[in-house]
Length: 455
Image (tube, rainbow, N blue to C red; front, side):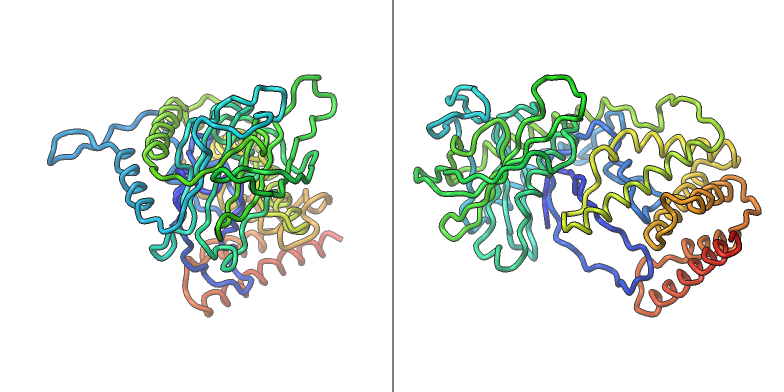
């Protein structure tokens, strides 16, 4: 199980089953206790290909829910206390040392990447994440510092169990940097831009249990947008990996130089556990003040512009993911395509669908979901949807069919998609996926016939 503080996977893209392509249902994955949730924007906005119509279960409600009551004791149940107790039991069973920043101490040298004094203590300890698989603790991550500030100082330290680097591919240092920028975006609403920026490879020394340890460091400082005012830009973020007594330890920081970090084995997790609970309470209070997009007053939409804007964003999301995969980077949505903007576009399209098609909200959500997945899949399976006149025509026909069930020229393709979407498998064996593959071929053939008829 991966246990990260309630944040599912940040911006990292998890491709859902898109139907036929020889795929089979994915096996159960380890479950992670996630980093602290609390994205100011709607968590449900990160909608990728083949998304379900239902909203995510962890979406902020926008108002404080009534606390559950322990009927036997007659008092409210504290879910954070239960989480803390679970984490305490898990960490008590750790059979390898776990490292963190030595509380209140920094190594000699400049503590910050700028000119701040070296004696700035990095405190604010909290358990950030851990992962178990098959009952075995695989790694533990702790954080310390000022998580509320993009300037830091802030450091995360992840300790892997012995032999972890032989059994799996550990995250690249570049991905650790991007994970940290995702955290700042999700928790603070600050978009530091998508990397890479101005990158440097450094060799530094991090003190571990009083002894200096050499570490290769990847540092990334975002490049300001052209024409941006001459103000201090986003903080450089760095990440390094080192070996400590047969263990792999990764460190990521902002606002503090690598050489100013001193690590030590954690003997008592109580401060980390209490810190985690405090942060969870803080972030839950922030989410409770958030007004969900369904309850907001949005600018009035004109015609089917809301549908077109939503399609443009979702197709751009898919294109961004494909581009990252092609160059070998970990696929994740660019931060500019996540969050509140996407949630508002989705909600505007649903409201317009309800109004123009005279549908209930449930019907409109289902229709918009099918429309978005239709064009996402088409953009993935063809080369002509984006940037061509026939691509624009296809988008227009899909929108008109979704809203008005119009007798568009591509009607056979629309009906083929409706069947493909309606009969998408939630599981099953090879025979089910073969049927889906054949249905997809018929759908794509219908679009090719539509293209041929246009010429």
